[in-house]
Length: 331
Image 1: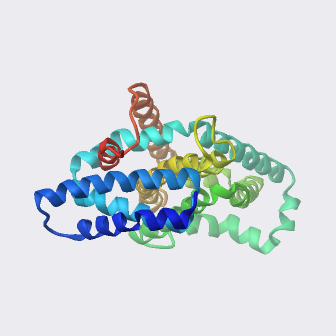
Image 2 (image 1 turned 180 degrees about the horizontal axis):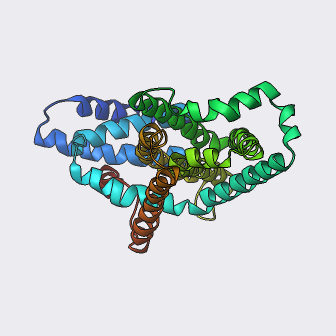
């Protein structure tokens, strides 16, 4: 395709479409013209993407088509129905579809972490390659337990919420390159295994598991989901499947990834509340662990039950405005 000739041929139509899309009021004849030009521009965008995907032209036409669609259908308005569908269908379905990826991440992370814990617990001297005896003594006697009561509960909640959201966002976004996700997870598994092994070796396993389970089960699961979805995005452009181009596969899985990221913000907020208010609470550790395990189990049940139900019904993760766009004729 000769892009210069194509732009010269259709540039007038695109400028006219842009002009009509920006008008606040149009006549009946102009409305018909707007719809017709929108259909043509959508077709042009499809042709450019498939035959000569010039990034600048694709971006220009994408913005033009989106602007025209909003002019025709109206900008999407806030709806509690959309919010409800997101939490009852869209989010659990997107997470459920990616379960082999995040379950694989969780299994690999857990095996490495617990294996490292067991090794350091049986060979405490190995910890000296990473930390000094003084740092170990401080960690075991006060630092680990004191970390969770260092700030006021509300401040601690906000702090860990933002930190964990950043970590989860990193592994999700970095998934397109695959390798950075493995590195980030390795560093976190190494730190967790090292601290856990030291605490176990010095007879403080009750403190370690008692303080980390209430929030850690849900927190780590959110990170695993983010990493698994990120890796799924990265794999989509390596193996897009027989019926999708690499670009389309990447766009579709990345879109689902953004939906998962939005839902994980709420999950990590719950985790932050557990860490801020339950973990340092002056109640028996067994009770704190029970609360954390119940919240974690409820989340997994929510994902499996609602996600599987939506999958069996053949539901889509598309939002209503996306469905509206798909319903509009393009040729």
